[in-house]
Image 1 (cartoon, rainbow, N blue to C red):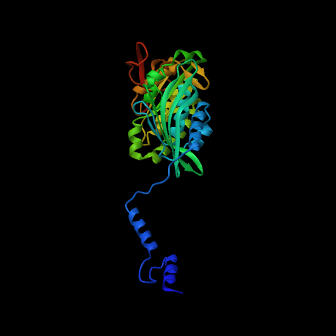
Image 2: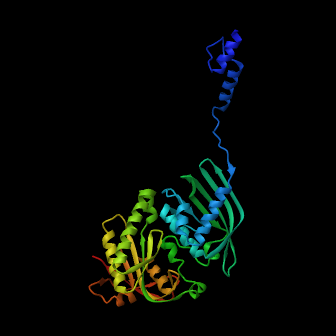
Image 3: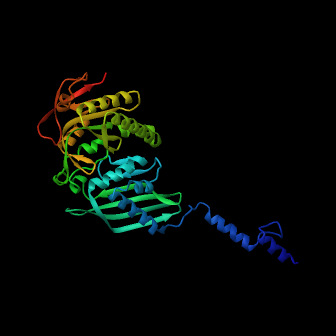
Length: 362
């Protein structure tokens, strides 16, 4: 075999020691490697009808309140984020995003989504959406929103890790009220509209209690998402036990707070006292507001001035405090409970002034 043949074979075997030096093929490979040094690695980006379908399914599942489907379409990572239009509307963690997805779908009263512009993309294990959506509500003008969403592949399925929604106008102009997130948002949104009340049926006189973790945004940032998510879940588990023990019913969770109804003012105050006693040994500061009055019920939710007033009272309370209306204090019959001096306050959205008292827990 000739020397050239040996060199050719060596080249094919990647062996530069045979012969007198590198072949033209090997030089070409070297030059290609040199040209690639310093270049960023690029991955192909493709349009993805699959990611588009998952996004449509997420919105459709929210419309019908399909909690199981919503949970399956959102990543359980503590890094999940949902960001919307209004100030401070930035939510973190699996449970919070799931809860807000379902609550928002219900509060907006959207019955159908249209997609004038919907673009889905994927690159490796990451997918994303850019969309212009039109929400249709019964008897009301449609509204336009722009949405972006990021998905990642988990176990072979696309799951949401970040969602951003913005409207062309403030929520107050689009929906007639701010949308609920934390108690602070809820307090501004519970002035029930006429159409909402018209669909309700009398639920009679109940005592409504709101709980909320004070400064939760700051505390969650200090602790980190994963630890905070677990603390909130443990907190909810405690609240569920206490509320059930005092014959109350949790209507809904709102961020890291709750709305609960009781058949009696006494049960509500006893539950509130036990909640504060239980959480006093933790790093959480919970504020509680309670009011008794007539309500209307639609589906499993409660509406009316009494609900609004209870939320406003909770907004006045500081961490560790229980604030109740004078009506609730009177209906509780005392029974060993001590109240602080009566305070006259104004409550936003409610006419006149109102008497509230602090329940003394120590």
